[in-house]
Every structure is written in C-alpha cells, then in structure tokens.
Length: 335
Ligand code: NAI
Image (cartoon, rainbow, N blue to C red):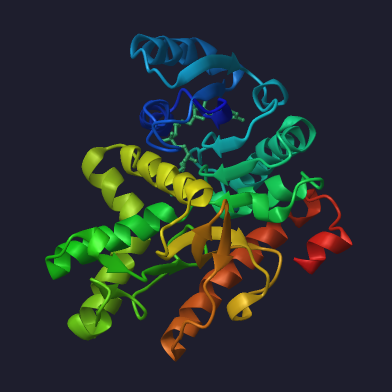
C-alpha cells in the first residue's frame, strides 16, 4: 500500500465540496491504491456545518481515508499538503462591484498563498476553483514566492468538459471520442471554446461536421454562459459538474492525460503571443506529474481576436488587484 498523501480542500462545507470530497475519498482522483488524509478548511462560521460533512465522510467507511482533520485557517489546514483544492471564495453579494469582488477575494487568496508558501509540501499542486479563479490563482501564486508558478492552476476544465459534452450530443458521439477541444483564456464569459483542432475518434475534423453559424452563434455563447444557464434551471450554481471537473483536472495533472489535450489555467510563458505573467487557459498535455503547453496549433483570425479579448479581460483584472500584489521577482517576470 502506498503512503497516504495529504489533500487540503477549502470551502469544504460548501456545495461543490459536498460532491468533491466523497469522490476524492472514494479514490476517483488519485486511484484506488492511493490512501488520502483530508485536511478540510472553512471559515470559523461554517465549522459546525463542516463537522456534519466530516461525520458523513466517516459514515461512508472509505478504506482509502486515513485521516480527516478540520481547520478554520489555512496555516493549520495546509500543513504538509501535497494537493490543495481551493474551492472557497467570497461570492458576489447584492450591489457589489466587480472591483470589490476582486479585492475581497484578493484578501482570501493572499493569505492562502502565504500559508501554502510556509507550510505546504514543497511539491504541492494547487488548483483554484473559487471565482474569479484565474485572478485568484495569480494572487495565490504571487504570495507564495518559494513555490514555482507552475505549481498553481486555475480551473477551466469545467468549460472544457462542457464543450466536449455539448459537442458529443450534437454529433451523436460519446464525449470521450472527441479530442483536441481547447478552451482559451479566462474562466468567464469571454473564454474562447475553440473547436478548430478537434477531431472525432482520432480522425475526422469536428469543424468540417458542424455549421459555422451554429458554432459561433449557439455553441460558443452557450459554453460561455453555461454557468448562468444551470443557475436558471436548477436554482443553484453548478456543483457536481464543477467537482467532477476539479477531480479530472487534478487526476490528469498528477497521473497524466493519456496523450489527450486538456484545458488548464496556467501561468503564461508567452506561448501563442499571450502576455506573460497571467493565468490563462491553454491546451496542455500532462505526463509524469507536470503539464506541457501544446505548441503549434493553428489559430485563425477569428480565434486570435477571441483570444485577445479574454486576455484583455485578464490584464484588466490583474490591473485592478495590482496594488495588492507583492512586488514581482525577477524570476516571476521570467515566467
Ligand atoms: P458555496 O457558497 O456553496 O461554498 C463556498 C464555501 O466556501 C462556503 O462554505 C464558505 O463558507 C467557504 N469559504 C468562503 N471563504 C472561505 C475561506 N476564506 N476559507 C475557506 N472557506 C471559505 O459555493 P460553491 O457552489 O461550493 O462554489 C465555490 C466557488 O466555486 C465559488 O466561487 C464559485 O463561483 C466557484 N465555481 C467555479 C467554477 C469553475 O469552473 N472554476 C465552477 C463552479 C463554481
């Protein structure tokens, strides 16, 4: 039996975690031979609810769960963690401006970055799910100067999975028969779901099988606004699908994506002309516990304009929180 790994989950008493924790505990993230110790982090006001969640985890008698601990601050909760799933974030309340939302979350992710920097395992992989995920991830990483920016990701896998699901339905194939979908940019309505390099069953090009008007006027806005569509029908935001995406992202990052392209919000190294130093969703292939950006994909004029728009939004978000970011080191500028 392998040694247990430590996994921190923040927002552990919330909706997404209510699905995510049970999947991790069942071995769906790191495999059925990998024991886990769950370090659950919440705000002090949610600790009672968190106790209830921990009781249910215990009642499942998961053989892989070798420990559960509950924490009301990240400096305790992140001690020695190999994986951190950062789900908890401040939601937008009535009348709150975008800048206020970014600032409220900057406070949370600055503290969590410092905590990871100080107490996490040096090889920690941290995935930001809480919105605005890309900019929260930037704040997190900049507050953890001893860790490499490539140890942090923002989740755009839900947008990737949504694209494959809706496309599979349209083409009458299984979503897993589709490869090469790419979601570029920000996890927001400016994201660009790109199907130009996608294929079905390793052969036929997707773009040749769909109508351009459907792609641009129906599919693209639907993916960009899918979160709002779910809220409209369900009355609640996406939870199980977000949990599944978080699990897919971390599993592929840790264990490999089997040669398949996955979309990950990662630190830009300037690939595809994207400004360096923002967390932007790129096409990646994961192997041996790390990711590589897939280079050389063709992006047409329409795609370039879409990519610029979402990059611009991320640069604006960065500018809005710049005064809260610790000074950039030469090393982080290199990235
Ligand atoms: P929720 O409101 O049900 O749960 C959030 C939990 O986080 C609450 O229990 C809250 O007490 C906790 N929390 C807040 N601040 C915290 C802090 N500083 N430390 C630890 N815990 C903290 O929300 P839900 O539905 O679970 O969603 C969580 C986040 O995920 C939201 O920001 C949501 O917008 C985002 N999200 C991101 C998606 C993505 O694709 N990247 C998809 C769906 C949701």
